[in-house]
Image 1 (tube, rainbow, N blue to C red):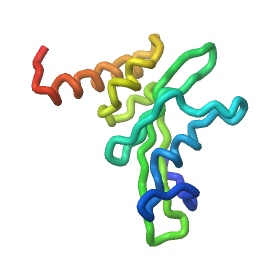
Image 2 (image 1 turned 180 degrees about the vertical axis):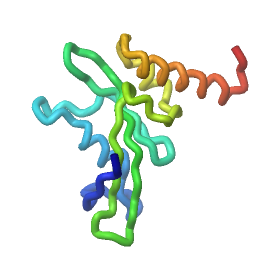
Image 3 (image 1 turned 60 degrees about the horizontal axis):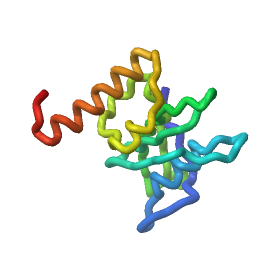
Length: 124
């Protein structure tokens, strides 16, 4: 699966605003409810989103900006069950996620916590 491009509607410092573009992408189309909490780390967007049965899961979106083209904002949308290889999800978002039986999601969450542990130089 590839990257989807379109003309951005939100800008910051003359470039597409990844957080606002992705917040819009992750807003529930029926309820108009935005993500519970979101953050951009580098070019990766992480968001705690409400799913069915009040489940809270993590959306992960890789963002790309190409200011040479009219279609200047690109994104690849994933969620934690797809085991995205981006593990810098902020702890504040990880703590909001509800328990899951999905093995990929649990492994992804574990690797995110390991990233934060290793980032501080703490070995457990």
